[in-house]
Image 1 (cartoon, rainbow, N blue to C red):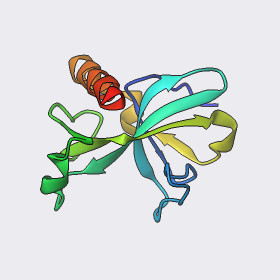
Image 2: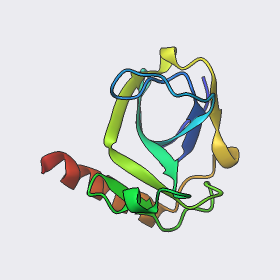
Image 3: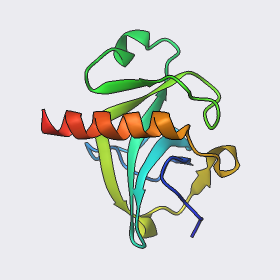
Image 4: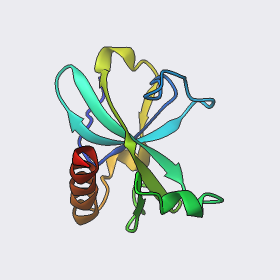
Length: 119
């Protein structure tokens, strides 16, 4: 399996959304927020283009320092938390040669996620 770390962006279309549906395209971006020997914890990442209004929803967080590892302005969906078995990820890529999100930005996302889950 890949050498995956929290803060990296993975690309896969093999991980179902929290509602059980599958992504419509092959390489959907996810922010890795946790990893163990058996599971990966992720949040869906979405580009901001054409969805600026969605980024202001309480369930979303606009990533301010996105590049690297993301090429486009993006936001994470705090309500998309998933814990998935690593064995189920058969088609996976790590974005930007494994460069992680800015650590201060990543810590803000983790804090926002924690606060969102307790609301």
